Length: 419
Image 1: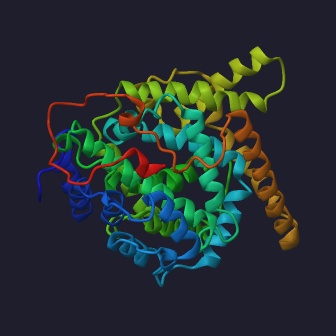
Image 2: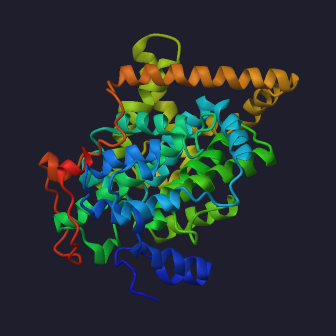
């Protein structure tokens, strides 16, 4: 086995416990996304990679006058839908998720993103791009925007909005890798490649099992069929976003194993991670919760803060919450017991037959779009920001990570490349 990134911990135990899965996890710390990385590193006649990508997503690769070999290779992959893909299953998954928009929105912030903050290596690309602490609300709204397109009717079909949005996010990852390599201070020996396959796999788990488990704590109950459909959706999304077949999770057990390997090999959170959790909580999660509480403004803010800290502790556990500096609050004991009571309301909503269920789904889609419009306005999101991934080189930030110089990369990221 190749040497592992030196800042990872418990590597031997990961292999001893998980066998081949543990070895793949460690080895793919050196693997990014070869297809997208090649596109990001190329010079493209006729425009930037971003503009050409948009055209090819909307009209097909043949709409480009002179596509590079790297662009052709990427779209050969994207246009070749795997035989196992079942769009009916993904449509059912979207319906199951959309009717639970409110709890899903809570857990993606208070459980998924907070759980991800427990690994300081995984967070370094976000820290250097300047978005980790400075824009947690905008980042959260953008995640909601992407998710709304993924779970829209037909969103993950080849010409669907969720498919295109996901491919564009994939290219952001590739451009961030190029930028970090170009800077010359990314410590590849210690951390592996930026945004490696294992941390991409964990992102699938953040939206999959981590979110589902937290929603169950809040009383949401999915049927076995719905769960299978939801994991199928995330499997295809992982494929589109550039996951390797060896690590792309296909079922709940895969998600759980990925979560365990992420935590096992993580050196823990650092100062940036703790600052991020504070910013995410204070600037986004608490205001959003306070908006739906009754009473005077100061009381709503205070109650929302205490409740959110309690939820975070329930979702990730006291040990990890302590490491992230999340305040301990007594209300966690109450919140940990609300699930069974709320599940009665969840089951009651399913009564009434297929016609009522369809109406409920349609109302949920309309309500979700209205909520996104509110958030876009409130957080001042102008236009479509998915391709506007700021980088440290362009913004003037020059955070030094270490003295190790990674291998020379011939491809360089230019500021025009992501405009």
